[in-house]
Length: 582
Image (cartoon, rainbow, N blue to C red; front, top):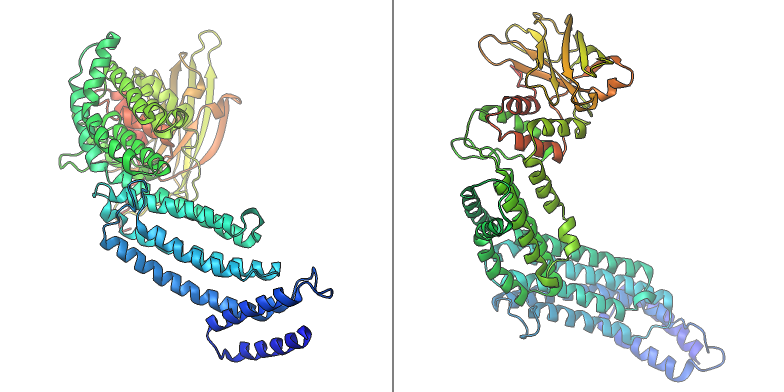
């Protein structure tokens, strides 16, 4: 009897699949009735016992159609829930729940849909897997659309005390509810494709939360700028020698910190009350980042500013093109350097800020704070601050080994020969550099082209020695021959690895600054083993450096009374000039 019924049903459903004569809800109801009939009268009969029945396959296409329609309903419901929530001002659902009602509404609807799927009690694992994959896509679409809508308007809520925190809590609550749904759908037993889809969704929501937290942290920038500016003014008043007693340093540190602490106290108390724990950790991390970066930018390594107040920002090593502007600012006395005592006060203030963000274990972990690149960068800058110009230049030469590398598009090349001689008795080094020729110089000019080569020795203990030589210029020659030899005396205080040669080809201009065509850097450590070297050096548009090199440059740029420091910064910030007619 069942077999005859099954045959009729199969043919009928195939017919309906072609023409869809009824609504998907009707097919779902029929599915439930057939399931009941099979379970009530058929499944325990000997021919069918323990076997996967065929009836779920008749309905698979119709359940899929219902899932498609259900997705549209879910998305429509989501927009309605968010609109209602927005109208009510995203109120917390209760004093204990830190999220608003739209999250609850969205998951109530998704759970209802899932309950219907579950009640089908589909006995065919392959078909169940198909349903779970399809439903996982709906969950992904609904939750990501929720996150997108919140993200788009988030910036406009950042200045409304609790609201941004509640919105971030909402995204976190999506993640919590998603985890519960994952377990309800089978957890570890869930079809791998559906499982991967939901895990990927968790990662996406996590990223959204990170982005919102960053936006929220950045929204405090102007207020933190103001606090740090006040700190800087107080720090300027700190006078005295570097070996002040600890209690004096502690008192000064407290005074310097007061503007920042007043700001943090009020805000962090609020965040602790209205943020979910994981959201709070993120917000603290972003505030920590903004505070430390602002301290570095405004107190430890303030950029030089011109008279109109526009800042010369050294945002990253790759933007070194901007550094050529440093030349224009080298003559001014406005920038200041920190004294050893001010550095000690700042070190102690940093420790206090760190303790504050740790909050006795309720805030960020000590290991996170200690290892955070923002703190390490700031501490490193402070440690370099009190070092002599010679030590800093030596550190630069020894760490910046890729300055002339990666010249993909050279603007010419220079042939040089270098001979290194170390006196066996005194240990003094003498370097002989022969500039042989230049070749393939790429340069356009409307007037006379008069290329010459400038060779500068960079390293410590050079203040009383001749550091720079230039060849004669050659007129209108794009492959000039020079064959000129120069001698540098280095002394015996440091080995060859502390020195480098910077080779710069320039276009000689009468009565104005010569124009830079291209730059190359040769490290003497590469010559030390053999004692001599002859090569063609490709000319790049500027030197390349990492964060350490940039930090050293920023510190030296503040030593406006130090000729060696000024010359070094000018050399390292030079870049190819604009060509005429280009």
